Length: 495
Ligand code: SF4
Image (cartoon, rainbow, N blue to C red; front, side, top):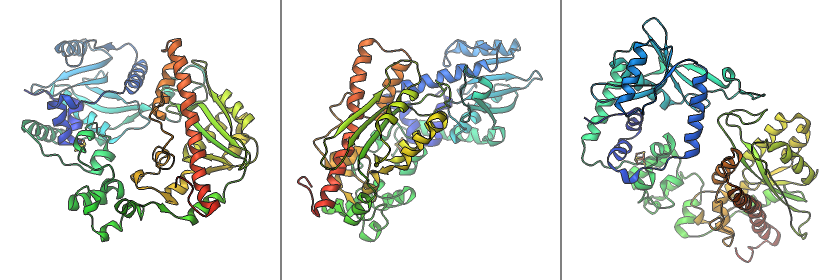
């Protein structure tokens, strides 16, 4: 008898291939993100503190002992059971984060999620839990999803009542018959010795970030119909013509996201729209300040005046060019004190170095602007200065996103990780000790929580200086490319 867990159930509903791979292709199993797991564990433990004096099931979910412990806790009429674990006679099993005793013969399921609101797949989780427990003879009165409260602002010790929000999802769940039918369907999939793979932009990327994408998408070209067309249209074009854009007829190509991208790819030519580039450069006012932040976030706010999952800036890099012929200057801030709030020091250094006039050039301004708005809110003594920085902001993403300049090797993306190698190929992130913002954030979080040796911290600090500095230098060089075209009326040496 094949066992079906809660996560098997959810995966089986999302995609037949995904559950089949999970059960039969151990070689494809993804690595778990330790930071995500740690966040989930910390939130789960705090949530239990909201329901004190319960009994914790100490055996692992998949061990028979966990079921025995749970049955005993139920028989003992425990007020709460943490990680209550049960299994049906047919092999469906689950653990419930908190099982609450209503003392009238009924129980409530409380499933803790380290998100800021319930998501669709949480309803699937809870539907499966209610099914398993009901099959085991437990009367379930209500089901709740307990999430973090995104409005909670830490002030001193964590206030558990305010940190969490309890959502009654009883009426949003699948009924028992539907769950039974889904289980039957999943079991039938698992009887198959082989499954055809049916990829889709909507299913594989939008519905969830599938861990098996490397395998299923291995024959999809680097730049394909999935990059050139929006969601459902991409799937339609794929089913008609396949993933290769060379097979898509001209009348269909006209529906692409960015007109001209596919033609640039097919003819291997660059796109230059000087009007778009001029429109952008007209917004620039010297001196230019090229600004980039690095940030960390945690489910449970670490500092006063911060909220669950708020991005906390710990580093900035600032390249300054006073006038077109001036030497570049470089300023930065990198917080170096573990466990303390990086923002006050960062704000003071930024205000000291960013001047009062001139454009603040960023790449994808939503992020930097959003962080400044939050710091203006959380530190009212600096509100005016932080908001004034936003007023001076110019987004270098725009001329690339609007295809003022585009190279086929960007594969339909205007992200700086694509535009930099396209236009400044000698600058690469490949040889750096940190390659992207996610790595910067993960490493700094390890430092903040005191889990690094002094040697590791020294190396990390050096890597962070180099990485964040590269981001602002990349903007300087990309703007040079644009100015090389708009100022001289011709392409620059490289372009
Ligand atoms: S990549 Fe797509 S087809 Fe493959 S398992 Fe994931 S969701 Fe299913």
